[in-house]
Length: 237
Image (cartoon, rainbow, N blue to C red; front, side):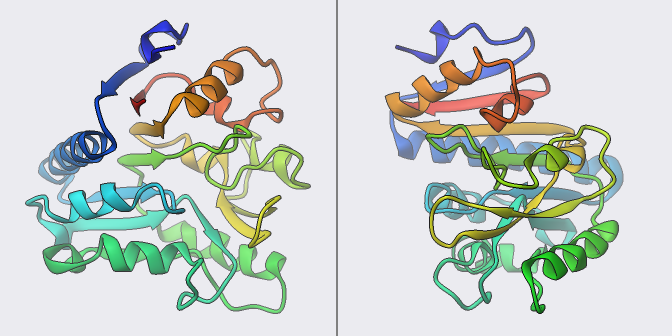
Protein backbone atom coordinates (compact mmCIF):
# COMPACT_ATOMS: atom_id res chain seq x y z
CA UNK A 1 0.00 0.00 0.00
CA UNK A 2 1.11 3.54 -0.76
CA UNK A 3 -0.28 6.76 0.66
CA UNK A 4 -1.60 7.60 -2.81
CA UNK A 5 -3.94 4.59 -2.49
CA UNK A 6 -5.88 6.21 0.37
CA UNK A 7 -9.18 7.91 -0.32
CA UNK A 8 -8.43 11.16 1.48
CA UNK A 9 -10.73 14.19 1.54
CA UNK A 10 -10.19 16.73 -1.22
CA UNK A 11 -7.62 19.30 -0.17
CA UNK A 12 -5.52 16.99 2.02
CA UNK A 13 -1.95 17.05 0.66
CA UNK A 14 0.34 14.02 0.88
CA UNK A 15 4.13 13.71 0.73
CA UNK A 16 5.69 10.27 0.18
CA UNK A 17 9.38 10.14 1.13
CA UNK A 18 12.01 7.47 0.60
CA UNK A 19 13.43 7.40 4.12
CA UNK A 20 12.90 8.67 7.64
CA UNK A 21 15.79 11.09 7.14
CA UNK A 22 14.17 12.55 4.03
CA UNK A 23 10.88 12.81 5.88
CA UNK A 24 12.45 14.68 8.80
CA UNK A 25 14.31 17.07 6.49
CA UNK A 26 11.34 17.79 4.22
CA UNK A 27 9.03 18.30 7.18
CA UNK A 28 11.54 20.63 8.86
CA UNK A 29 12.02 22.69 5.69
CA UNK A 30 8.29 23.09 5.12
CA UNK A 31 7.58 23.93 8.76
CA UNK A 32 10.33 26.54 8.66
CA UNK A 33 8.84 28.07 5.50
CA UNK A 34 5.42 28.32 7.18
CA UNK A 35 6.95 29.91 10.28
CA UNK A 36 8.87 32.44 8.18
CA UNK A 37 5.67 33.35 6.38
CA UNK A 38 3.83 33.88 9.67
CA UNK A 39 6.67 36.04 11.02
CA UNK A 40 6.64 38.12 7.84
CA UNK A 41 2.87 38.60 8.09
CA UNK A 42 2.46 39.38 11.78
CA UNK A 43 5.87 39.51 13.43
CA UNK A 44 5.67 36.18 15.25
CA UNK A 45 4.83 32.53 14.71
CA UNK A 46 3.49 29.75 16.92
CA UNK A 47 4.47 26.11 16.46
CA UNK A 48 2.77 23.28 18.35
CA UNK A 49 4.46 19.87 18.24
CA UNK A 50 3.87 16.39 19.59
CA UNK A 51 6.23 14.44 21.81
CA UNK A 52 7.32 10.83 21.91
CA UNK A 53 10.45 9.45 20.27
CA UNK A 54 9.37 9.67 16.61
CA UNK A 55 9.87 13.45 16.16
CA UNK A 56 13.51 13.57 17.35
CA UNK A 57 15.04 13.63 13.85
CA UNK A 58 12.52 16.29 12.79
CA UNK A 59 13.31 18.41 15.85
CA UNK A 60 17.03 18.26 15.16
CA UNK A 61 16.53 19.11 11.48
CA UNK A 62 14.24 22.02 12.35
CA UNK A 63 16.78 23.39 14.84
CA UNK A 64 19.21 23.74 11.93
CA UNK A 65 16.84 25.93 9.91
CA UNK A 66 17.61 29.63 9.63
CA UNK A 67 14.75 31.37 11.36
CA UNK A 68 14.14 34.45 13.44
CA UNK A 69 13.81 32.13 16.41
CA UNK A 70 13.25 34.94 18.91
CA UNK A 71 9.92 35.52 17.13
CA UNK A 72 8.81 31.89 17.46
CA UNK A 73 6.64 30.41 20.23
CA UNK A 74 6.89 26.63 20.65
CA UNK A 75 4.35 24.59 22.58
CA UNK A 76 3.19 20.98 22.96
CA UNK A 77 0.02 19.33 21.72
CA UNK A 78 0.31 16.98 24.68
CA UNK A 79 2.48 16.22 27.67
CA UNK A 80 3.18 13.34 30.04
CA UNK A 81 2.43 14.36 33.65
CA UNK A 82 5.95 13.81 34.89
CA UNK A 83 8.52 16.40 36.04
CA UNK A 84 10.22 18.19 33.16
CA UNK A 85 13.52 16.59 34.19
CA UNK A 86 12.04 13.11 33.67
CA UNK A 87 13.14 11.04 30.66
CA UNK A 88 9.49 10.68 29.58
CA UNK A 89 8.82 14.44 29.59
CA UNK A 90 7.91 15.86 26.19
CA UNK A 91 9.18 19.26 27.33
CA UNK A 92 12.52 17.66 28.16
CA UNK A 93 12.59 16.10 24.69
CA UNK A 94 11.88 19.41 22.94
CA UNK A 95 14.47 21.26 24.98
CA UNK A 96 17.15 18.65 24.24
CA UNK A 97 16.51 18.19 20.53
CA UNK A 98 14.83 21.35 19.21
CA UNK A 99 15.61 24.30 21.46
CA UNK A 100 19.34 24.14 20.87
CA UNK A 101 21.75 26.62 19.27
CA UNK A 102 19.95 29.58 17.66
CA UNK A 103 16.60 27.80 18.21
CA UNK A 104 17.09 28.24 21.97
CA UNK A 105 15.95 31.83 21.47
CA UNK A 106 12.36 30.61 20.87
CA UNK A 107 9.86 31.08 23.68
CA UNK A 108 8.66 27.75 25.05
CA UNK A 109 5.11 27.34 26.34
CA UNK A 110 4.93 24.19 28.48
CA UNK A 111 1.92 22.19 29.66
CA UNK A 112 3.40 20.59 32.77
CA UNK A 113 2.38 22.04 36.12
CA UNK A 114 3.15 20.58 39.51
CA UNK A 115 -0.16 20.03 41.29
CA UNK A 116 -1.90 17.74 43.77
CA UNK A 117 -3.66 15.83 40.98
CA UNK A 118 -3.68 15.41 37.22
CA UNK A 119 -7.00 17.25 37.08
CA UNK A 120 -5.55 20.29 38.87
CA UNK A 121 -2.50 20.24 36.60
CA UNK A 122 -4.76 20.24 33.54
CA UNK A 123 -6.75 23.17 34.93
CA UNK A 124 -3.53 25.12 35.44
CA UNK A 125 -2.42 24.36 31.88
CA UNK A 126 -5.86 25.31 30.59
CA UNK A 127 -5.59 28.73 32.22
CA UNK A 128 -2.03 29.25 30.99
CA UNK A 129 -3.06 28.46 27.42
CA UNK A 130 -5.21 31.57 27.39
CA UNK A 131 -1.97 33.40 26.59
CA UNK A 132 -0.87 31.11 23.77
CA UNK A 133 -0.81 33.08 20.50
CA UNK A 134 -2.84 31.67 17.58
CA UNK A 135 -1.36 28.43 16.28
CA UNK A 136 0.31 28.80 12.88
CA UNK A 137 1.72 25.28 12.49
CA UNK A 138 0.65 22.06 14.24
CA UNK A 139 2.74 18.91 13.84
CA UNK A 140 1.07 15.67 14.93
CA UNK A 141 1.97 12.00 15.05
CA UNK A 142 -0.29 8.98 15.31
CA UNK A 143 -0.30 5.78 17.34
CA UNK A 144 -1.21 2.31 16.13
CA UNK A 145 -4.55 2.66 17.96
CA UNK A 146 -5.42 5.81 16.01
CA UNK A 147 -4.67 8.27 18.80
CA UNK A 148 -3.01 11.59 18.14
CA UNK A 149 -1.66 14.08 20.68
CA UNK A 150 -2.89 12.30 23.85
CA UNK A 151 -6.41 11.85 22.52
CA UNK A 152 -6.62 8.14 23.32
CA UNK A 153 -9.61 5.90 22.51
CA UNK A 154 -11.53 5.00 25.67
CA UNK A 155 -9.95 7.73 27.82
CA UNK A 156 -12.60 9.05 30.24
CA UNK A 157 -12.39 12.64 28.97
CA UNK A 158 -12.16 11.81 25.27
CA UNK A 159 -15.61 12.95 24.18
CA UNK A 160 -15.17 16.23 26.01
CA UNK A 161 -11.73 16.67 24.45
CA UNK A 162 -13.12 16.01 20.95
CA UNK A 163 -16.03 18.46 21.27
CA UNK A 164 -15.46 20.94 18.42
CA UNK A 165 -16.98 23.79 20.42
CA UNK A 166 -15.70 22.79 23.86
CA UNK A 167 -14.67 25.48 26.28
CA UNK A 168 -11.50 23.77 27.54
CA UNK A 169 -8.06 24.19 25.97
CA UNK A 170 -6.42 21.39 27.96
CA UNK A 171 -7.82 18.27 29.61
CA UNK A 172 -6.42 15.38 31.63
CA UNK A 173 -6.19 12.13 29.68
CA UNK A 174 -5.31 8.54 30.52
CA UNK A 175 -3.06 6.51 28.23
CA UNK A 176 -2.99 2.69 27.98
CA UNK A 177 0.81 2.77 28.21
CA UNK A 178 3.23 4.18 30.77
CA UNK A 179 3.22 6.96 31.79
CA UNK A 180 -0.56 6.71 31.98
CA UNK A 181 -1.34 10.25 33.10
CA UNK A 182 -1.28 12.79 30.28
CA UNK A 183 -2.30 16.33 29.45
CA UNK A 184 -3.62 17.20 26.00
CA UNK A 185 -4.73 20.21 24.07
CA UNK A 186 -8.34 19.73 23.03
CA UNK A 187 -9.63 19.47 19.48
CA UNK A 188 -11.27 22.88 19.90
CA UNK A 189 -7.81 24.43 20.30
CA UNK A 190 -5.79 22.18 17.98
CA UNK A 191 -8.27 22.69 15.13
CA UNK A 192 -7.54 26.42 15.12
CA UNK A 193 -4.11 25.79 13.58
CA UNK A 194 -3.60 27.56 10.29
CA UNK A 195 -1.67 24.55 8.98
CA UNK A 196 -1.74 20.99 10.39
CA UNK A 197 0.88 18.37 9.49
CA UNK A 198 0.74 14.65 10.27
CA UNK A 199 3.97 12.62 10.15
CA UNK A 200 3.84 8.81 10.05
CA UNK A 201 6.27 6.04 9.13
CA UNK A 202 5.83 2.43 8.06
CA UNK A 203 3.12 0.25 6.56
CA UNK A 204 1.47 -0.36 9.94
CA UNK A 205 0.83 3.35 10.42
CA UNK A 206 -0.48 3.64 6.86
CA UNK A 207 -2.88 0.77 7.55
CA UNK A 208 -4.01 2.50 10.74
CA UNK A 209 -4.64 5.68 8.76
CA UNK A 210 -6.65 3.74 6.17
CA UNK A 211 -8.73 2.24 8.97
CA UNK A 212 -9.32 5.65 10.51
CA UNK A 213 -10.76 6.88 7.22
CA UNK A 214 -13.40 4.13 7.42
CA UNK A 215 -14.70 4.63 10.96
CA UNK A 216 -17.71 6.82 11.68
CA UNK A 217 -17.09 7.60 15.34
CA UNK A 218 -14.21 9.97 16.09
CA UNK A 219 -13.82 8.39 19.53
CA UNK A 220 -12.88 5.05 17.95
CA UNK A 221 -9.82 6.56 16.23
CA UNK A 222 -9.41 10.21 17.25
CA UNK A 223 -6.91 11.00 14.48
CA UNK A 224 -9.92 11.00 12.14
CA UNK A 225 -10.88 14.42 13.54
CA UNK A 226 -7.83 15.88 11.79
CA UNK A 227 -8.14 14.16 8.40
CA UNK A 228 -9.44 17.21 6.58
CA UNK A 229 -7.96 20.41 5.11
CA UNK A 230 -5.80 22.21 6.00
CA UNK A 231 -3.74 19.05 6.48
CA UNK A 232 -0.55 17.71 4.95
CA UNK A 233 0.49 14.10 5.57
CA UNK A 234 4.15 13.08 5.45
CA UNK A 235 4.86 9.36 5.12
CA UNK A 236 7.74 7.00 4.39
CA UNK A 237 7.57 3.23 4.13
